[in-house]
Image (cartoon, rainbow, N blue to C red; front, top):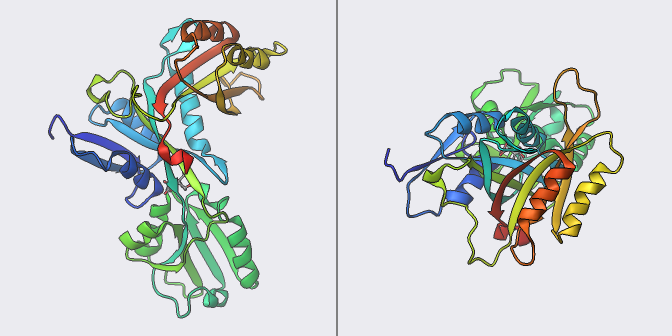
Length: 332
Ligand SMILES: O=C(O)C(=O)C[C@]1(C(=O)O)C=C[C@@H](O)C=C1
């Protein structure tokens, strides 16, 4: 492999929405050769990037415009913060950082291994219909599945999780089902159907047209070799975003408000906030949370040094995941 090659990991196999995100981020590059490498799970996108120096980037889904957080990714960010031992005061320095974001349009199709006599009409003839897809998808096609169940009143439906949407198509194509009373179908993109030479029974079955998933681009922190890609630049029209996670002094009344007041006092404009359950160890009490915030990072009028000092005083622990340019697709 050439020194100028870069290797990008994504949730595979080819044809997933994560693959599409990786192509959008790196596919146009003419200065380097990009190797796109599929992996089997979102945890592997983190683990391999951290430990395998031949991997330069990972692209992971973060949130969907219809059904919200991709909890697998949120929890992996949380767990990595928790496992990291490098610390400056209350700031935790993780081995991975975020250097970019991507937005992919989600257009799910109902897919079968072979052509059915009449698109979706004959589905009611099956005793059982097994539908395979990535768990994130069920909340994106809820209304469609309800409608399908109404058409097929006598049919038993089973929704089966796969590691990705494209993997769902591979499953129905290559794992032969000899039971003629059971139909196995998948929900995935048109690209996944074409790559596997499968048949599309119905296009655009997601409940909301314009459904979009947001992805993060990760790399090893301070990896100079790949520093240039996705790093914030000064001469762009788009804003830079910071992603931060933090935990609060749980039993102090007003501790979350105190932290958010630091943003207000420094005129830092927050653009998202969410939380996930958090515990430091098996003996920890339930109902503790880690918070994820994003804010616009523009230099004008803000003294970032004092901002981070004040932030550090109010948090139990915090981690700055990186500064990255707001992707132009955000505005579409
Ligand atoms: O299975 C895929 O195709 C993926 O890339 C994963 C994923 C996700 O986890 O959100 C990506 C986009 C869609 O929202 C559904 C699934």
